[in-house]
Image (cartoon, rainbow, N blue to C red):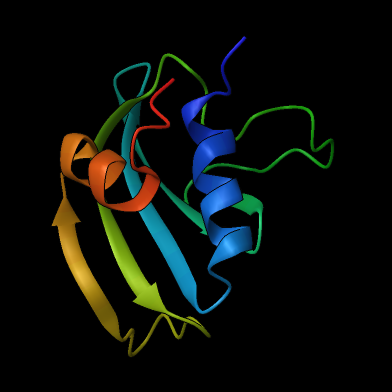
Length: 100
């Protein structure tokens, strides 16, 4: 069984701890922004469960775009590596052929 998109992005940040991913998604017709850093995800809009087995980025979420930001993340002055990547470009660039 393949990993979910959220797990793949979390794994990417474990392998690249110098980066933070900010993922803009649509979940059940509501927009959310999810920060992924060092293997952990947290919503900037909704509450985040304490249970790490409950995905912050559900499989049914539509990824609108992904920003790559240099760590540490400073919300007032983020240092962008790349902005507005589509899922297709991010998947190829960040994950290679590891598509779920």
